[in-house]
Length: 234
Length: 193
Ligand SMILES: [Fe+2]
Figure 1: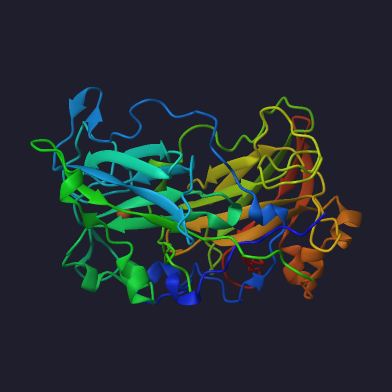
Figure 2: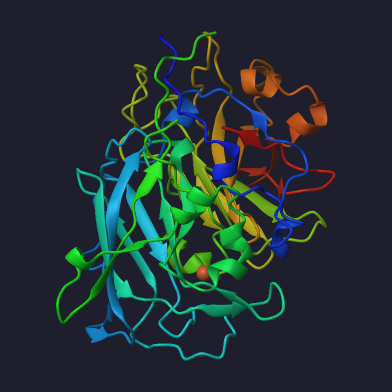
């Protein structure tokens, strides 16, 4: 059998390091040994595909719960999932979660004294189209305080989970909003060494895809690892 | 240089269960499936404290060593309604579990045969990017001794962190224990893939 074609490796400074002292929880949760490099086998170049039609209608709309509208600024978040060569990634699962417009998560350990919204859960899922497109309707999340350091606030963000075509394309990240004054002070955002890699996590306001009298719109494209050009040779 | 720069990783944060914990994703197979086994483990930090906000994902071949994916070119058989993906979020004690079957052996690079194994992604609050590891089975002594990935690790102590130990059966189901240490003396072997 011919050897499997692997995936290209990310450059080190396009992802955060395991240990980033400014984000205190990394101190005890980062391995001390360097990871062991392995060449890609069938295990790494395959991965879960979600062509099973398990999603319910409405999972792409976080702005309505039991027919009632959530509080806050209604927005669309849409874009495409592509690989590094610009090829669309079709039928891949995207999962998102976020706090409400006031900056509060519907989660027992969130003690931020901001109001919960009975009409907002903050969880959504979609599968990309044949062209790699996706679209969510949601509420613009608020900023929220956290205990990392004195007066620490997270810039507004939506958590995004994406599979892509292989085990090695799996990525979980956070999407931010343009011009947030909190970027400067956020160790999670700033843990990414490369400036342009950091800026790629900031969505873009897009007037063309807004809906008059209904919702603003932000664009956010995902780029996952591309395929090696030639099969791995011993 | 790529035409398009990749999307960077960020932590799942403390509220990951809102987005990721729906359904019985721990069950790769139902408990009554022939050959079903249970994997149990804890995630620990560098001080040996349990990590209650981690998520473990597994990806594996079926009992014939076939991945349910178009890039697996082998002739091995698919198994109806077996996809090979599982997900378990840790509880307040840092505990996760899966019910699955032992995968068959999958070809490795250069005409080798890999031992039965699961690919494992570890996510948590306090982890800016997932760590990747593998789970092998302690009762596959012969296959493990032939596995190219295990054999690429010289330190036996490090290698053993990848091997789930067979423990007593539970309700007639074989059980394996697999702890994940993010840091410290018993630190799990993590891979750069
Ligand atoms: Fe968050």
